[in-house]
Image (cartoon, rainbow, N blue to C red; front, side, top):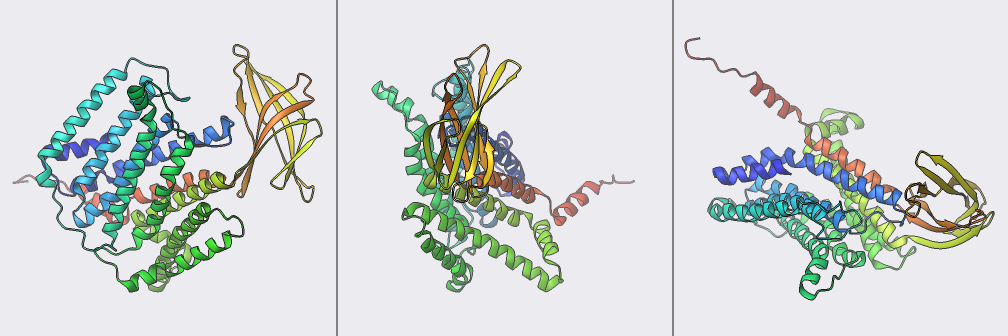
Length: 484
């Protein structure tokens, strides 16, 4: 995020504060945002596959260190559209791009200085004071520039209507700001509590879920509503045309979910995800039908041309689709996960969530400097008795640190749910072993959502034909000296 921040500081110093700097840094922000998104998803998958606690996100300080700049960068990528189109929210955009860079440096400081305790922290380093000094320079230097340039950052227009795209994007900024503040507060609360009271009080994952969860649901809803509103004002007829079917189908799905659960939170969450999904499909369908009507193109060609000629818009919809898939995975895992702890002898089985898991014995293998010990479990359909697969949760016992084994979970992954098995221990003979078994619904869609996000960003940053033609014209222009 150093390049977008440098452009912003350069614009402040040079007083060239029109919308040209914003258009210039859009790709320079999207590219690191894409890598940051991919890194967060890959880190979550690593935690899920390797740590053996049944989850993928624990709101650990180091996890939050990557999540915080992602929040502000995402807000900036949306808010910048309003400055391009309407010439407003200029101060917002400056603060958001500064916040993103500041949070990147702050995250580096927290992981290297030891001020926060984390299972992911690096060894304490002497660079902490240098980062702290740099943070102070970044804060006060930017605030000075922003204060002295405030007259040049006045908006060129105003928000004319409450039901408008501008209002939706402003609400989007406030929601992202709220999530960022809540995450920052929860992350640093142990440090503040120790300074003020002498006791380090940690904030656990349930607090983050309770505070941040509703804000994210509101963001999801806004993600479906905002892009379909008109600039300045949206008529009642346009609202009916855009939202009647998505709303009716989402309400129908919510009613149907009462047959699955009476917990209102996953019902609302899944209904919102379906609402956003339908708005995305609706926009693609309308675009494809319009191209077929005017150009007589086949459906695949029409879809390809939509993305090719307006990748920024339709690539953005693909990114939103990826976020929806991640939302579905989070809701499924948070509200419908089942777990059990069990000790089984060879040949014994345990039933959970319609599965029967049979322990068949230990398997061991030496690999270099460690021994890999696994417990084979065969997974059956509990109703039909049909064998589905087998899983092999393992422990790696290293020669130099036999008291600190590492885990390898056994997973049967399907689109509907994961059978996730962790081996906790075994007797010396291997005739019995202790397991923790999780049934994690819909988790695979988190990893699919991450892939979809990357594809959407690539579509959004790919130059369209008009941009390539303009670039070629500029590249081919050669000034001719007078008299030649």
